[in-house]
Length: 573
Ligand SMILES: [Zn+2]
Image (cartoon, rainbow, N blue to C red; front, side, top):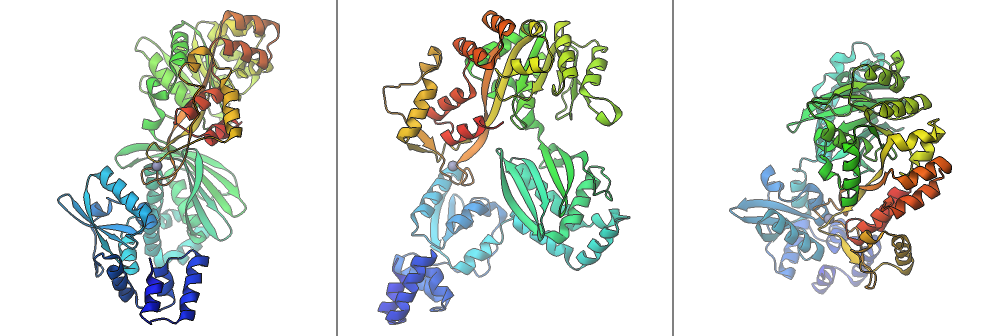
């Protein structure tokens, strides 16, 4: 592009001005068009008419035209903003696209990609900044929708907040439609973006809304701090919490139908310096109730787990940090065990997903209904299969072991970093070593890892350092796992890039990384003699167990994820 040059050639600007504009382009990272308009060298329309001639592309004046949401849907708001291009109309299969920078290669590539994905052919027109902005405004984005709700709050806002501070009878106040709408908009965007958590955090001067997507927290929006009390009140009303209590944490939940799906939300409030922070856990039943086959277990792991499930009794444990998907794993196993002739009873904290045919109960520590107490009650219900949310203390550890020993299949979770760490942990918790071999069937340690976007991932040769790291980890792989990799050839890995499909994140969805330990005769010996984690690991590996790190590296070589991602999650405690 030579717009500035052209202006000089036409004598519209002096040499001095030309140099000044050139350096603004160079130093501020702005485009020639932006610099020319900002310096008021030419009116916007004249500038784009000049550009239209220069690049030989017709210009289209939109005159505040309204674009239908259907047409806008062809290019997402994020892509429109990023590539400065918007869809203008659609007739049959032909879409008219307005672009501010049609000469930009990455915009052209993005458009080509979108036309393939959404199956249309396109015709490009040059449009001005103003026309572009007018179309962009028509996108229903999180920002625009909440902003609209904010505007609707309008004048009453001050009065509303004041009466809220008096905190009585605020029901009427928070029934205010704009607040309801704003909360709904936040929830809906969280669901559509696949967020697992929503954090509503007051700071000194604004209210931050952050979404956790694929395990990572992103700042999604900030709102004026003045709406904080009404938003918190609205959420408290929905979840039956005390509106006037903001000094102690409260827990609650509510359900809502969003985009035709029944979603449960679990609420926790927490007082911080600038008021109450609210954390909302999104419990999407279609996410939490994945069938076992869809969990991403390897063939060896499926065999080991299935064998354990067929035993008449025994203990099956899932381990990993919070948010590693252990509950989802237990639910998927429970689904297999949940047959008509079988009595399945759970005690959970809290009940995350309701499962038809299963008797689910929830701990209530404030009235003494703990995991241990719950388990004692459950054993009187003649259960076949028992799920206990978590083994947290010695008492529960001993009850769980005894239940398994007396003919029940017991599923539970434990907080350890690895599968092999579960055995020493159980012993720490007072379980006698000789009881472990006869009760513990299988341990599944796990993490959730982000999957690379298959559309935009980039193939690269790893650095020498990374290559050495990879080779180090796979050299001890059992033969069956080594068979698939050719170590004589060069190693390639992939890195995250970013495209329209993955919202420029480079990653899309998550998958499990597993480490599955099964009880064998050789292990029994070690447990009885000296159950050190390193010894257990050695034997388990000899028997075909892959560590999470090894499984991760195989997924890296297979192009499913990145090395950074594997290192990040396997170092999580
Ligand atoms: Zn992508």
